[in-house]
Length: 463
Image (cartoon, rainbow, N blue to C red; front, top):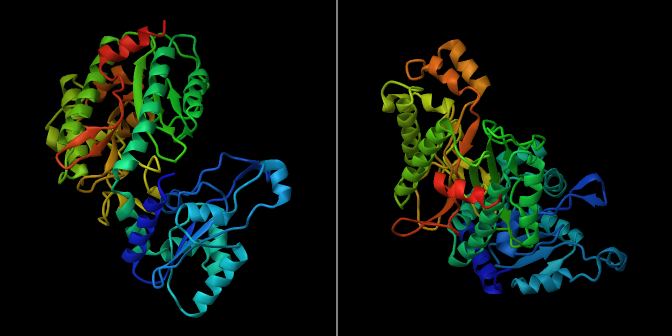
């Protein structure tokens, strides 16, 4: 937890930005796996965590923009709860630690909301992403679940984004801790990626690194020999000599801040000639993107430059052809790079994605609908304080190749006959995390092995 003053200042700024009405910030509840008392790992709502810092279920924060009053509502644990949980602090004591002087029960919250609703006061809430909070908003405010997305307060959404988007020095320090643990996870995976080892064993090992640090993983680990499936959470394969192993994993520390890295390693310990060619094209795309990161540059332009480097490299191999600029303009690169170059990162691994990509990543400007480009989560002009990922990839997806080939889609830029030689290649990517500074960019955390020489050397340390 940060100092009391940090949370006080955050809430004060939010109240002043929104201007009037009541701000309702819902925390998360425990979520049962298969019966009430057997729950998933608890994760507090990130916006609640940002403004109140309390990692406890069943809390709601309320800020009155007109009177400057603040409350935390929830029901205290009872003696019967202590039998199972041990002694727990009161909500009032936890509220005091973050500078909130008023607290109350859930019934008191409901009465407060009813009273303010009768007075026709504006009650601001963020779009809910969990069903239990959708039910609460229906019961408390009478807003149907299917209407809550459009009824959410745009003023509040923008105000929250315009605070959380700009990471402070103390936040960057926490993100750095998460990234450093994430690097340790990846180094271990590189050393373990040997023939006969299972994806599940590596997944378990990197998960253990995150948990042993006192935190958890920031998202379900991707540990796969089928890197062409971008979000592959299946861990049932055993690594073989000629495989490429892709690991996409990050740590989340106790305060909720995240890391997000990707690595690709040859299971044999040495990249084959074909693997080396594709890996270096992707790495060149990665490094060229980093060179462009600075305030005032649109991230969409960085993405398009990264795509152009991939097209140039694949042209050299005879897989693509034609004018590079035209190929990118027509989305031909998306056969191999169908996702975005990166995304914001902070308390969420895809920061504030629950608040809407059009606001977070595009500052209210509509996204492209073109295949590939529509998956770019971040397109806006970069500013100091932004924390983001850089993660170009090259993927050979048989089903997508067959679909494009059957219709000759972008055939003027793709040599489908040559492409058949790479049909079973799989996929690869590298990913690192960066802070946009006043003059450029800064790698967050310690350096992850990413050159061919560094990856092969790390693999050898596991022998």
